[in-house]
Image (cartoon, helix red, strand yellow):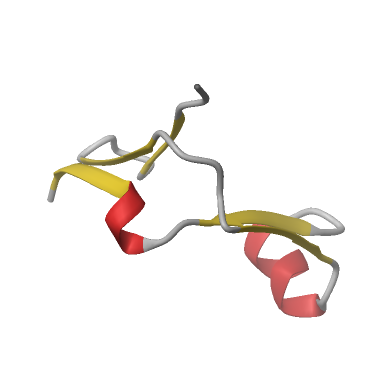
Length: 56
């Protein structure tokens, strides 16, 4: 079983999912380039009920 986790930069909010994402995308539009500071952005999308949160 895979475990996916993410957190904000300060670590106050954490997200965990134990299911595979519904969708994974890689985008090279100007917005994603600006958002990530790289030539592309990548993201995984999960359904709300698949995610558990900790913190504020």
